[in-house]
Length: 221
Image (tube, rainbow, N blue to C red; front, top):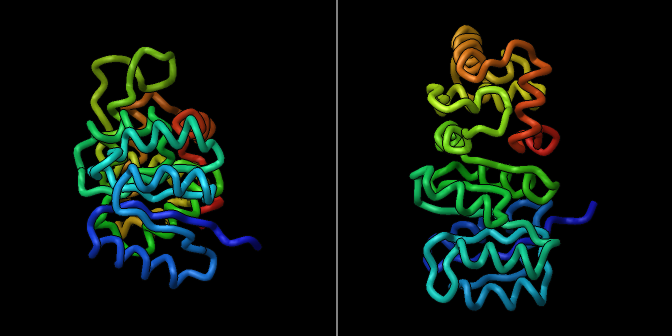
């Protein structure tokens, strides 16, 4: 199977070295370029056409948002995964609208980075579990989908992650193991989330998940 070709763009040498070591240790990933600012990254992405560009938000030259917009317009075959220290959900939506396919916090575990790279490379969307609930709440509006009515209580991060994993086909027991809680807690998160969003069946949860880009299950197993 072809390896996932990745370019990194981050202006912090220590972070760059750490990510490089993680990716180089994975036989499914090939690191094909590194840049320390957005202005340097864009021509490299144009020339190399990687599968995934892992980019920081705050960089000199072009920042992460500007770089994401340019990559989407000029290099549509490259998917952007944002890697950042910013935990505020207000950062997420502009980046996703600009074309980013993933948003991962730098404090996340190593396996989360590799999982996110695989998810994004295969066409999925990856949101860091710790900000997923707030980010999804920020997408609420009057688009007619279940749970988007104005005034609804937002999902907690645990509720959002539980619902996302249900939509992706994981059992309650698998979810409990993945997020390190009891099966009873999973059932509680599911019930609360479904009530907040007005979802009554698993089929409705799956449809909701599809509408919000959660269905990257095959890349996460």
